[in-house]
Image (cartoon, rainbow, N blue to C red):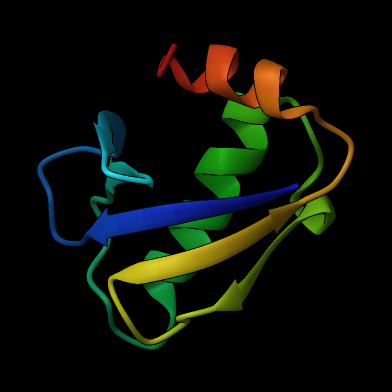
Amino acid sequence: MRLRIRVQARASRTEVVGVHGDEIRVRIAAAPVDGAANETLIRFLAKRLGVGRSAVAIVGGARAPSKAVQVTGVTRQRAASRLGII
């Protein structure tokens, strides 16, 4: 399954904010330096979705706020429920 994520780096904490258009908005506490924000996003999504880190990959927009994230091992309905966006 592919998710569209809009990331706000350097937030006070890492959390799902909600949905804006077709993107899930996520605040990340890490700075976008040396891939730290991307790694934090991957770990956060893996934990919230109940999958391993290797099941989550950024497949588009690695250097941009809007990202395409591929997640294996979870359905769209389960992902929406676990991220609190339904």
